[in-house]
Length: 496
Image (cartoon, rainbow, N blue to C red; front, side):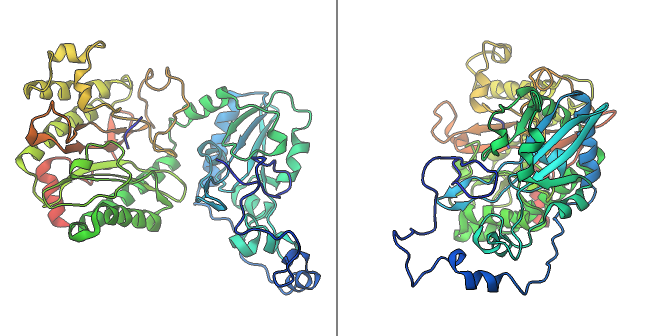
């Protein structure tokens, strides 16, 4: 994928309202009690009957194998960077989609990296202890049978959300001390200058006096640049599942042409991602024909025609929230037109030059420059640049970027644009190192209304994107199951 809330108040103990406006509701409440629609929480007989006769469901939290050990090592690495400081990291809350309907919850990446926990409104506290830190995770108390919230709390009641793990359940799978969220104020009382990070869309009252510490966010991002073996395995799973998603989409091209359009292909991949992982790692991009040059064409609401080249930028996110990010451009008919192939061949040459520059010890920007030199030279050869190649590549030129305004690579991991809170010196100003996972994604985007482009090239957009693991002596292309040359892509399509 190319570089570039409001929550209704609720009654959960210890949570501060996120807004002073009236809460969103599913329907209005009467000014006076309606005997035909009594409020169940106010009916003693109902509460008594509903509070009995329940067994205990399986409340084992859904976690991926190995995550507890990985998170413990991540906490150790963070602890070394903040000796003697109390650290607080929040998981966040699902944003509102409309009124009283929320989007699916996805935990803050820094929080998840440190805990392996996917609980909403949770808070991790690392308190200094000797040379390291003691970790405690605070989660909202679940509402089990016998409690009013069991049927009245749509966020935490087990009748609403299904099996609701409690502190003991989370502690058992994460090998981590876990307490209820209501205990957090006492845990932070008297703590001097704690550092806060994470997603704070709904803040616990104990966190209200705190401000987000950019230093903590920066260090977390920079630590996450180097993936450990467990994380690399997750990224391999994400990439492999994504390749399978490309196959599924290509098989559906005839249905898309027949009338399903871009929506059908988007839905095909998103269903595949939800089945094989947690879901798409970012908004799936399906750009056919003149939509392909639009960098983030996530509307996916256009037709798919046999003569089109279609740009697919897609990634499966695993159930541990690590995502792939892969792009290919395909001829819908199965064969590139001469003009489409001409653009594709130049992007391929740029892509190969960029990937060849991914090596440990080299500047992060090396693959950017290598890819851009090829693009600039190719555009000059096509008489599309008003200046020389050297002038275009100079800091005061950049005319070639008219057709490639986005970045052409980034870190990849828990976020599709991973480690974004890092310092410039550690990211673009840094060097590549073993354990980093990077994308390389040059492209050319000739918009249909760009009159600087010959008519035969207008409406063609091509991007190639692969996910690379920096190794001790080079780089491994994790997504190399998908070909990048035009002939190879045509053959791969036939095989599907």
